[in-house]
Image 1 (cartoon, rainbow, N blue to C red):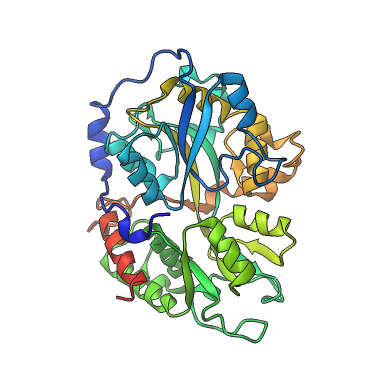
Image 2 (image 1 turned 90 degrees about the vertical axis):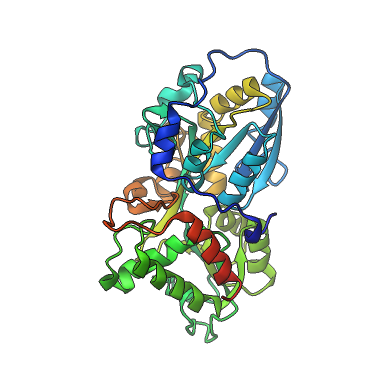
Length: 387
Protein backbone atom coordinates (compact mmCIF):
# COMPACT_ATOMS: atom_id res chain seq x y z
CA UNK A 1 0.00 0.00 0.00
CA UNK A 2 1.13 3.55 -0.62
CA UNK A 3 1.59 5.70 2.44
CA UNK A 4 -0.05 9.10 2.89
CA UNK A 5 3.22 10.91 2.12
CA UNK A 6 2.96 9.68 -1.47
CA UNK A 7 -0.60 10.87 -1.99
CA UNK A 8 -1.44 13.33 -4.71
CA UNK A 9 -2.03 16.84 -3.42
CA UNK A 10 -4.07 18.03 -6.39
CA UNK A 11 -7.71 19.02 -5.89
CA UNK A 12 -10.40 20.19 -8.33
CA UNK A 13 -12.82 22.95 -7.43
CA UNK A 14 -16.46 22.54 -8.38
CA UNK A 15 -16.24 25.32 -10.97
CA UNK A 16 -13.47 23.48 -12.75
CA UNK A 17 -15.56 20.32 -12.83
CA UNK A 18 -18.47 22.19 -14.38
CA UNK A 19 -16.35 23.97 -16.98
CA UNK A 20 -14.71 20.79 -18.17
CA UNK A 21 -17.84 18.71 -18.65
CA UNK A 22 -18.50 20.25 -22.04
CA UNK A 23 -15.04 19.24 -23.18
CA UNK A 24 -15.30 15.68 -21.89
CA UNK A 25 -15.26 12.78 -24.33
CA UNK A 26 -18.54 11.31 -25.47
CA UNK A 27 -19.93 8.23 -23.78
CA UNK A 28 -19.55 4.88 -25.52
CA UNK A 29 -22.37 4.17 -28.00
CA UNK A 30 -22.46 0.37 -27.98
CA UNK A 31 -20.90 -2.68 -26.37
CA UNK A 32 -18.81 -4.95 -28.57
CA UNK A 33 -17.07 -8.23 -27.91
CA UNK A 34 -15.29 -8.53 -24.59
CA UNK A 35 -11.53 -7.99 -24.58
CA UNK A 36 -10.91 -10.87 -22.15
CA UNK A 37 -10.03 -8.79 -19.10
CA UNK A 38 -11.23 -5.98 -16.86
CA UNK A 39 -8.88 -4.27 -14.38
CA UNK A 40 -10.48 -2.68 -11.31
CA UNK A 41 -9.16 -0.44 -8.54
CA UNK A 42 -11.31 -1.22 -5.51
CA UNK A 43 -11.70 -0.96 -1.78
CA UNK A 44 -10.82 -4.08 0.22
CA UNK A 45 -13.72 -6.53 0.24
CA UNK A 46 -15.48 -5.01 -2.77
CA UNK A 47 -14.50 -7.57 -5.42
CA UNK A 48 -14.64 -11.08 -3.94
CA UNK A 49 -14.09 -14.41 -5.72
CA UNK A 50 -14.51 -16.74 -2.73
CA UNK A 51 -10.87 -16.75 -1.68
CA UNK A 52 -11.57 -15.37 1.80
CA UNK A 53 -14.94 -17.12 2.23
CA UNK A 54 -16.40 -19.49 -0.38
CA UNK A 55 -19.90 -18.13 0.26
CA UNK A 56 -18.90 -14.72 -1.08
CA UNK A 57 -18.04 -14.89 -4.76
CA UNK A 58 -19.43 -12.54 -7.38
CA UNK A 59 -16.48 -12.78 -9.79
CA UNK A 60 -16.30 -16.44 -10.89
CA UNK A 61 -19.69 -16.57 -12.65
CA UNK A 62 -19.05 -13.20 -14.31
CA UNK A 63 -15.79 -14.51 -15.75
CA UNK A 64 -17.48 -17.68 -16.99
CA UNK A 65 -20.39 -15.81 -18.57
CA UNK A 66 -18.41 -13.02 -20.24
CA UNK A 67 -14.90 -14.37 -20.76
CA UNK A 68 -13.61 -11.23 -19.01
CA UNK A 69 -10.99 -12.09 -16.40
CA UNK A 70 -11.20 -9.76 -13.40
CA UNK A 71 -8.00 -8.35 -11.93
CA UNK A 72 -8.13 -6.17 -8.82
CA UNK A 73 -5.79 -3.60 -7.28
CA UNK A 74 -6.84 -2.87 -3.70
CA UNK A 75 -6.52 0.74 -2.56
CA UNK A 76 -6.55 1.91 1.05
CA UNK A 77 -7.55 5.56 0.56
CA UNK A 78 -9.37 7.71 -1.97
CA UNK A 79 -6.15 9.61 -2.68
CA UNK A 80 -4.47 6.33 -3.57
CA UNK A 81 -7.32 5.55 -5.95
CA UNK A 82 -6.89 8.91 -7.67
CA UNK A 83 -3.14 8.34 -7.95
CA UNK A 84 -3.60 4.86 -9.44
CA UNK A 85 -6.19 6.04 -11.94
CA UNK A 86 -3.95 8.93 -12.95
CA UNK A 87 -1.16 6.42 -13.64
CA UNK A 88 -3.51 4.59 -16.03
CA UNK A 89 -3.81 0.98 -17.09
CA UNK A 90 -7.05 0.38 -15.19
CA UNK A 91 -10.61 0.16 -16.50
CA UNK A 92 -12.72 0.88 -13.44
CA UNK A 93 -12.52 2.28 -9.92
CA UNK A 94 -14.98 2.05 -7.01
CA UNK A 95 -14.57 5.72 -6.11
CA UNK A 96 -15.95 7.45 -3.02
CA UNK A 97 -17.25 11.01 -3.10
CA UNK A 98 -13.93 12.51 -2.01
CA UNK A 99 -12.32 11.15 -5.19
CA UNK A 100 -15.01 11.16 -7.86
CA UNK A 101 -15.19 14.87 -8.66
CA UNK A 102 -11.39 15.06 -8.82
CA UNK A 103 -11.41 12.23 -11.34
CA UNK A 104 -14.08 14.00 -13.39
CA UNK A 105 -12.29 17.36 -13.30
CA UNK A 106 -9.02 15.74 -14.28
CA UNK A 107 -10.71 14.04 -17.26
CA UNK A 108 -9.47 10.76 -15.83
CA UNK A 109 -12.90 9.14 -16.12
CA UNK A 110 -15.42 9.22 -18.94
CA UNK A 111 -19.19 9.76 -19.12
CA UNK A 112 -21.30 6.63 -18.78
CA UNK A 113 -24.03 5.72 -21.28
CA UNK A 114 -26.73 4.44 -18.93
CA UNK A 115 -28.65 3.09 -21.93
CA UNK A 116 -25.96 0.40 -22.15
CA UNK A 117 -26.66 -0.64 -18.55
CA UNK A 118 -30.09 -2.34 -18.47
CA UNK A 119 -30.18 -2.47 -14.66
CA UNK A 120 -29.75 1.31 -14.35
CA UNK A 121 -33.49 1.61 -13.76
CA UNK A 122 -33.08 -0.43 -10.57
CA UNK A 123 -30.64 2.02 -8.94
CA UNK A 124 -31.92 3.66 -5.74
CA UNK A 125 -33.42 7.01 -6.80
CA UNK A 126 -31.42 8.74 -4.01
CA UNK A 127 -28.24 7.78 -5.84
CA UNK A 128 -29.11 8.11 -9.53
CA UNK A 129 -28.22 11.79 -9.83
CA UNK A 130 -26.00 12.14 -6.76
CA UNK A 131 -23.70 15.17 -7.11
CA UNK A 132 -20.53 13.13 -6.58
CA UNK A 133 -20.94 11.34 -9.93
CA UNK A 134 -23.37 13.56 -11.88
CA UNK A 135 -22.34 16.94 -13.31
CA UNK A 136 -24.62 19.01 -15.57
CA UNK A 137 -26.91 15.95 -15.87
CA UNK A 138 -24.00 13.86 -17.19
CA UNK A 139 -23.40 10.57 -15.34
CA UNK A 140 -19.82 9.52 -14.70
CA UNK A 141 -20.43 6.26 -12.94
CA UNK A 142 -22.72 3.56 -11.63
CA UNK A 143 -23.63 3.61 -7.90
CA UNK A 144 -22.31 0.55 -6.07
CA UNK A 145 -22.75 0.60 -2.25
CA UNK A 146 -22.91 3.08 0.62
CA UNK A 147 -22.58 3.17 4.38
CA UNK A 148 -21.20 4.85 7.49
CA UNK A 149 -17.71 4.99 9.00
CA UNK A 150 -18.46 3.21 12.27
CA UNK A 151 -16.76 3.19 15.66
CA UNK A 152 -15.42 -0.35 16.04
CA UNK A 153 -14.64 -1.42 19.59
CA UNK A 154 -13.54 -4.41 21.64
CA UNK A 155 -16.37 -5.57 23.89
CA UNK A 156 -13.91 -6.78 26.54
CA UNK A 157 -12.52 -3.24 26.91
CA UNK A 158 -15.97 -1.63 26.88
CA UNK A 159 -18.58 -3.07 29.25
CA UNK A 160 -21.16 -0.97 27.42
CA UNK A 161 -21.10 0.36 23.88
CA UNK A 162 -19.33 3.73 23.66
CA UNK A 163 -21.72 6.57 22.95
CA UNK A 164 -19.21 9.17 21.73
CA UNK A 165 -16.21 9.46 19.46
CA UNK A 166 -14.37 10.94 22.47
CA UNK A 167 -12.87 7.49 23.14
CA UNK A 168 -10.65 7.90 20.07
CA UNK A 169 -10.09 11.67 20.23
CA UNK A 170 -9.33 12.30 23.90
CA UNK A 171 -7.24 10.42 26.44
CA UNK A 172 -9.53 8.68 28.91
CA UNK A 173 -9.77 5.61 31.13
CA UNK A 174 -11.88 2.90 29.57
CA UNK A 175 -14.25 0.61 31.46
CA UNK A 176 -11.55 -2.07 31.71
CA UNK A 177 -9.65 0.33 33.96
CA UNK A 178 -6.90 1.08 31.45
CA UNK A 179 -6.10 4.22 29.47
CA UNK A 180 -6.98 4.34 25.80
CA UNK A 181 -3.50 5.72 25.04
CA UNK A 182 -1.80 3.53 22.43
CA UNK A 183 -4.97 1.46 22.03
CA UNK A 184 -6.90 3.52 19.48
CA UNK A 185 -6.46 4.26 15.79
CA UNK A 186 -7.34 6.97 13.26
CA UNK A 187 -7.81 6.80 9.51
CA UNK A 188 -4.74 7.43 7.37
CA UNK A 189 -6.31 9.86 4.93
CA UNK A 190 -6.78 13.65 4.83
CA UNK A 191 -10.55 13.24 4.61
CA UNK A 192 -10.39 12.18 8.29
CA UNK A 193 -10.16 15.87 9.17
CA UNK A 194 -13.93 15.85 8.55
CA UNK A 195 -14.34 13.32 11.37
CA UNK A 196 -12.66 15.76 13.73
CA UNK A 197 -14.89 18.57 12.44
CA UNK A 198 -17.99 16.43 12.91
CA UNK A 199 -16.95 15.77 16.52
CA UNK A 200 -16.47 19.50 17.10
CA UNK A 201 -19.94 20.28 15.73
CA UNK A 202 -21.31 18.72 18.93
CA UNK A 203 -18.55 19.46 21.44
CA UNK A 204 -17.63 23.00 20.39
CA UNK A 205 -20.85 24.39 18.89
CA UNK A 206 -19.57 27.97 19.23
CA UNK A 207 -17.29 27.26 16.27
CA UNK A 208 -20.40 27.31 14.10
CA UNK A 209 -19.47 24.33 11.92
CA UNK A 210 -22.43 23.52 9.67
CA UNK A 211 -20.76 21.03 7.36
CA UNK A 212 -17.64 18.98 8.22
CA UNK A 213 -16.35 19.39 4.64
CA UNK A 214 -16.82 23.18 4.61
CA UNK A 215 -14.48 24.73 7.17
CA UNK A 216 -13.32 28.32 7.51
CA UNK A 217 -9.83 29.06 8.81
CA UNK A 218 -10.78 29.07 12.51
CA UNK A 219 -12.87 25.91 12.27
CA UNK A 220 -10.13 24.17 10.33
CA UNK A 221 -7.52 25.15 12.92
CA UNK A 222 -9.70 23.74 15.69
CA UNK A 223 -10.02 20.45 13.82
CA UNK A 224 -6.24 20.25 13.35
CA UNK A 225 -5.69 21.04 17.04
CA UNK A 226 -7.99 18.15 17.96
CA UNK A 227 -6.12 15.83 15.62
CA UNK A 228 -2.76 16.87 17.07
CA UNK A 229 -4.15 16.09 20.51
CA UNK A 230 -5.39 12.74 19.22
CA UNK A 231 -1.97 11.87 17.82
CA UNK A 232 -0.64 11.50 21.38
CA UNK A 233 -2.88 8.46 21.94
CA UNK A 234 -2.95 6.89 18.46
CA UNK A 235 -1.43 3.44 18.02
CA UNK A 236 -1.51 3.54 14.21
CA UNK A 237 -3.02 5.54 11.36
CA UNK A 238 -4.73 2.77 9.44
CA UNK A 239 -5.51 2.51 5.76
CA UNK A 240 -5.14 -1.23 5.17
CA UNK A 241 -8.27 -3.01 6.40
CA UNK A 242 -6.41 -6.28 6.98
CA UNK A 243 -3.66 -4.59 8.98
CA UNK A 244 -6.34 -3.04 11.18
CA UNK A 245 -7.94 -6.45 11.65
CA UNK A 246 -4.57 -7.81 12.78
CA UNK A 247 -4.08 -4.85 15.13
CA UNK A 248 -7.41 -5.53 16.85
CA UNK A 249 -6.54 -9.23 17.04
CA UNK A 250 -2.88 -9.13 18.09
CA UNK A 251 -1.78 -5.59 18.97
CA UNK A 252 -4.19 -4.61 21.73
CA UNK A 253 -6.13 -2.00 19.76
CA UNK A 254 -9.63 -1.61 21.20
CA UNK A 255 -11.30 1.32 19.40
CA UNK A 256 -11.11 3.04 16.03
CA UNK A 257 -13.04 4.46 13.14
CA UNK A 258 -13.54 1.58 10.75
CA UNK A 259 -15.66 0.10 8.02
CA UNK A 260 -18.35 -2.53 8.64
CA UNK A 261 -16.16 -4.88 6.55
CA UNK A 262 -13.58 -5.21 9.32
CA UNK A 263 -16.30 -5.54 11.95
CA UNK A 264 -18.02 -8.35 10.06
CA UNK A 265 -14.79 -10.22 9.36
CA UNK A 266 -13.66 -10.06 13.00
CA UNK A 267 -17.09 -11.17 14.18
CA UNK A 268 -16.95 -14.11 11.78
CA UNK A 269 -13.72 -15.11 13.54
CA UNK A 270 -15.60 -14.97 16.89
CA UNK A 271 -13.54 -12.01 18.10
CA UNK A 272 -15.06 -9.77 20.83
CA UNK A 273 -15.89 -6.96 18.41
CA UNK A 274 -18.90 -4.72 17.89
CA UNK A 275 -19.59 -1.35 16.30
CA UNK A 276 -21.77 1.70 16.80
CA UNK A 277 -22.57 5.08 15.25
CA UNK A 278 -22.03 7.47 18.19
CA UNK A 279 -24.26 10.37 19.19
CA UNK A 280 -22.26 12.86 17.10
CA UNK A 281 -23.17 10.96 13.94
CA UNK A 282 -20.71 9.68 11.36
CA UNK A 283 -19.02 10.42 8.09
CA UNK A 284 -19.65 7.90 5.36
CA UNK A 285 -19.11 6.82 1.80
CA UNK A 286 -21.28 6.39 -1.26
CA UNK A 287 -19.17 4.58 -3.81
CA UNK A 288 -19.49 4.73 -7.58
CA UNK A 289 -17.98 2.47 -10.22
CA UNK A 290 -16.30 4.88 -12.65
CA UNK A 291 -14.64 4.10 -16.00
CA UNK A 292 -11.21 5.37 -17.00
CA UNK A 293 -11.14 7.77 -19.95
CA UNK A 294 -8.61 5.47 -21.63
CA UNK A 295 -9.94 2.16 -20.36
CA UNK A 296 -8.02 -0.62 -22.13
CA UNK A 297 -11.00 -3.00 -21.92
CA UNK A 298 -14.12 -0.81 -22.30
CA UNK A 299 -16.50 -3.57 -23.37
CA UNK A 300 -15.64 -5.80 -20.44
CA UNK A 301 -15.88 -2.69 -18.24
CA UNK A 302 -19.46 -2.07 -19.33
CA UNK A 303 -20.26 -5.74 -18.79
CA UNK A 304 -18.93 -5.46 -15.23
CA UNK A 305 -20.90 -2.26 -14.51
CA UNK A 306 -24.10 -4.07 -15.50
CA UNK A 307 -23.09 -7.11 -13.44
CA UNK A 308 -22.31 -4.86 -10.46
CA UNK A 309 -26.03 -4.03 -10.14
CA UNK A 310 -27.13 -7.67 -10.09
CA UNK A 311 -29.40 -8.12 -7.03
CA UNK A 312 -27.51 -11.20 -5.80
CA UNK A 313 -24.13 -9.47 -6.07
CA UNK A 314 -25.54 -6.38 -4.40
CA UNK A 315 -27.03 -8.38 -1.53
CA UNK A 316 -24.01 -10.63 -1.06
CA UNK A 317 -21.67 -7.61 -1.03
CA UNK A 318 -23.90 -5.77 1.45
CA UNK A 319 -23.82 -8.82 3.74
CA UNK A 320 -20.05 -9.15 3.38
CA UNK A 321 -19.15 -5.49 3.80
CA UNK A 322 -21.97 -4.30 6.05
CA UNK A 323 -23.04 -1.74 3.46
CA UNK A 324 -26.32 -0.76 1.81
CA UNK A 325 -26.99 -1.82 -1.81
CA UNK A 326 -27.46 0.62 -4.67
CA UNK A 327 -30.08 -1.80 -6.05
CA UNK A 328 -32.70 -2.13 -3.32
CA UNK A 329 -34.08 -5.31 -4.89
CA UNK A 330 -31.18 -6.93 -3.05
CA UNK A 331 -32.82 -6.16 0.28
CA UNK A 332 -35.33 -9.00 -0.03
CA UNK A 333 -34.73 -12.67 -0.61
CA UNK A 334 -30.94 -12.69 -0.29
CA UNK A 335 -29.86 -15.67 1.79
CA UNK A 336 -26.66 -14.06 3.07
CA UNK A 337 -28.09 -10.59 3.76
CA UNK A 338 -31.49 -11.59 5.10
CA UNK A 339 -34.65 -9.53 4.81
CA UNK A 340 -33.61 -7.23 7.68
CA UNK A 341 -30.02 -6.83 6.50
CA UNK A 342 -30.48 -3.53 4.69
CA UNK A 343 -32.18 -1.97 7.70
CA UNK A 344 -29.47 -3.35 9.99
CA UNK A 345 -26.79 -1.85 7.73
CA UNK A 346 -28.37 1.61 7.89
CA UNK A 347 -30.86 1.84 5.02
CA UNK A 348 -32.87 4.47 6.90
CA UNK A 349 -29.81 6.55 7.87
CA UNK A 350 -29.08 8.02 4.43
CA UNK A 351 -29.96 11.57 5.47
CA UNK A 352 -27.96 11.29 8.71
CA UNK A 353 -24.61 10.46 7.13
CA UNK A 354 -22.11 13.13 6.09
CA UNK A 355 -20.88 11.46 2.90
CA UNK A 356 -17.26 11.93 1.90
CA UNK A 357 -16.67 14.64 -0.67
CA UNK A 358 -13.71 16.73 -1.74
CA UNK A 359 -13.52 20.06 0.15
CA UNK A 360 -13.38 23.08 -2.15
CA UNK A 361 -12.49 26.74 -1.64
CA UNK A 362 -15.86 28.06 -2.84
CA UNK A 363 -18.49 26.57 -0.56
CA UNK A 364 -22.11 27.11 0.37
CA UNK A 365 -21.89 27.56 4.14
CA UNK A 366 -18.98 30.05 4.36
CA UNK A 367 -19.18 33.52 2.83
CA UNK A 368 -15.42 33.97 3.14
CA UNK A 369 -14.72 30.62 1.54
CA UNK A 370 -13.44 27.30 2.85
CA UNK A 371 -10.05 25.66 3.30
CA UNK A 372 -9.47 23.65 0.08
CA UNK A 373 -8.45 20.02 -0.11
CA UNK A 374 -4.79 20.53 -1.02
CA UNK A 375 -4.38 22.13 2.42
CA UNK A 376 -6.07 19.15 4.02
CA UNK A 377 -3.53 16.87 2.34
CA UNK A 378 -0.39 18.74 3.39
CA UNK A 379 -1.63 19.54 6.89
CA UNK A 380 -2.76 16.01 7.68
CA UNK A 381 0.62 14.67 6.62
CA UNK A 382 2.10 17.16 9.07
CA UNK A 383 -0.23 16.00 11.86
CA UNK A 384 0.74 12.38 11.33
CA UNK A 385 4.40 13.44 11.31
CA UNK A 386 4.00 15.20 14.65
CA UNK A 387 4.11 18.75 13.31
